[in-house]
Length: 164
Image (tube, rainbow, N blue to C red; front, top):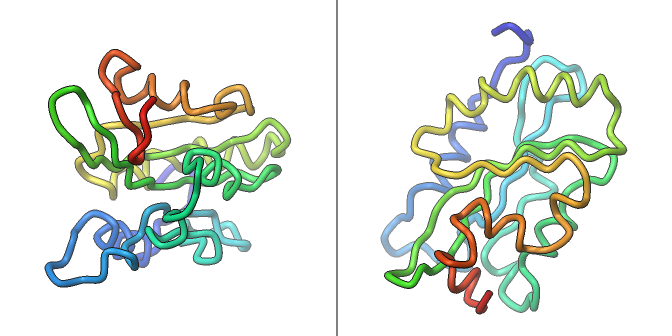
């Protein structure tokens, strides 16, 4: 690994938890958003357990997109996996979206560290269709930028149960 930062085994286990639906499992307890960060010692990518969201955490949210954006730190970088529920004109869909969060108020050093390690964490997440990179708040001002990543308003009819 060129960046010198390893991916902790818990990251892969958490990816499996968000990706696989176990029969009989409580839907409310399913992971909806998982954040990952570089550990304080800078040696590995770990799960940011304090900032993960489950289905039950978003159940009564009027604007799920805004809740997800507000979960991200304003001055630090993160990777995230978002279990996105959306509908096209043809059918309902559920896709994992990889998010690279590098806000404008984060230091250049942190942005460089996260950018150089991104390929290693993504390599652990097989089968991702979508990636959303946020470098400043104009990338996250509303759901329209995110909807474009899924195919645009011509394709996406509903996001998280709400018309777009």
